[in-house]
Image 1 (cartoon, rainbow, N blue to C red):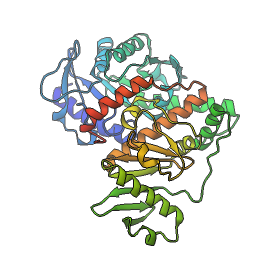
Image 2 (image 1 turned 180 degrees about the horizontal axis):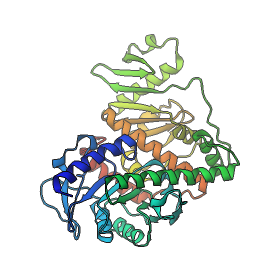
Image 3 (image 1 turned 60 degrees about the vertical axis):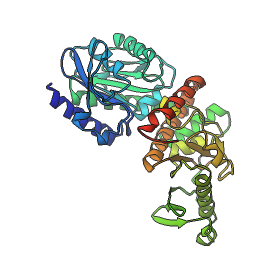
Image 4 (image 1 turned 30 degrees about the vertical axis):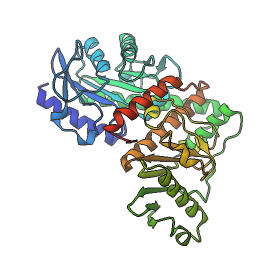
Length: 402
């Protein structure tokens, strides 16, 4: 493929990855072979929806060297391994898709798949864990690639690597992988629970009850309030369903005199902003997986490495609207509230959204690990290192600025 055409194709692929939910914002990376010796790849830490063809970086397959002022993705090495081993492959996408990421935490070396997913070759290998961008991760991927017959590799506690002859085939591989991982998890649930169908709420209750030895119940609470808010020059703007409220500490009592739960929700938002000057946006997330984990009373640790980077090395579960919520957010970007979901916070709305997405993904991974009885978070020291590097370097380009 000629250089300019390849650049345009990668930009198009980036937008498609975001639109299809295979990645979010800067997570993952995309590359395209342009010759026997070089490929182009997405730059480090850039929002895919903002990329232009000129932003793509040309990288040598043999040693990952590059020229120019734009830094390529730190995962360029795993792309190079695909191109080295497979001269027929011209397109590679590294995704952080939901179900493949969940399978990545199951502590198994491979995923058996049926003939319904021909691109996967009957078995998807799970590469050994390595910190993002490291030689250890690259070696693990190379070893998995050497024995796989399909066109996808799962990276433990990280995500997936999908490749094909061209753009379209790489996407087809990614979709087949996601469907195969979803089926694998759901089949495990129906086999253990003897239920005919699957709902996220039911799966979460069952898996976490098995893990804790106590019955975990996610109730449809009529009083569940799920708000978003943002800091303003005079106070905050609170959004509840289709209504917006301009609030300060002075008008809070009057505004919600007849609604206790909205009053407590707004009071907690105001308290967070008061004690955390670097937080400008809050999302109260109540997805089924987040709600299930918040009902379990289990402290949430990193199972996927972008959670360690973006959310923190540990997310506490506190009582609803506890006075400790504001202080807990000094060390992490999210806090779980018992039975009521999570507060996900950021410097911008996009940052808070990214936090909510990665908390949801980590909760799903945790639930799936519990379902398979192999709950093993990422090593705490490695989690701390990732968080430190992210906060000092990467966050300057993307999400949270603390």
